[in-house]
Length: 178
Image 1: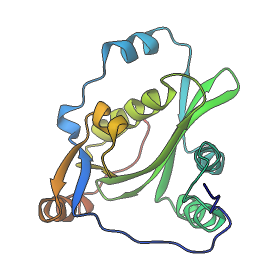
Image 2 (image 1 turned 30 degrees about the horizontal axis):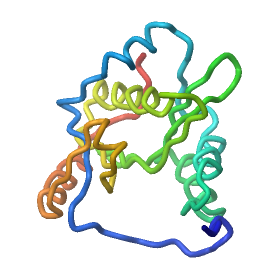
Image 3 (image 1 turned 90 degrees about the horizontal axis):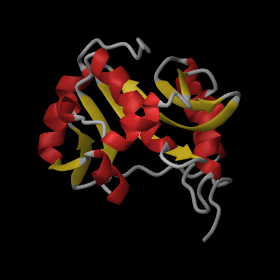
């Protein structure tokens, strides 16, 4: 596998079916709730955005997250459109995720974890933020075994566009209210 991190090429793709999470039906599995109750980890948002995106890039042998992507998303973050969730154990970053917000839509881009279930913790923490702030759409773009396990569903492109049009017109803040 090749490392495409230093490529300047940014690709655009619109899948025929889109993977989303229905925020009205998010259920935290018992194993994740038990891990949360142990209070081993703490969470933050938007404190080290660039470290999170680099962690996502470094966690894959073959990645689309190149230097150009990191630079552009970091600019989006500084402008208030891209956000990160960070999972900590003591002073150590154990994982996180990042994505882009437009109105009441959050477009999940990537996640990483260096300990078991940390990506799930970051995901459910993100869901809590989105639900409390009345977001309508959590977009995952593609479905895979992991996102399906988290509750992702696939919908046709036409249905996705209808939801997207409504969601982006909402006035939502990415505010960590925990």
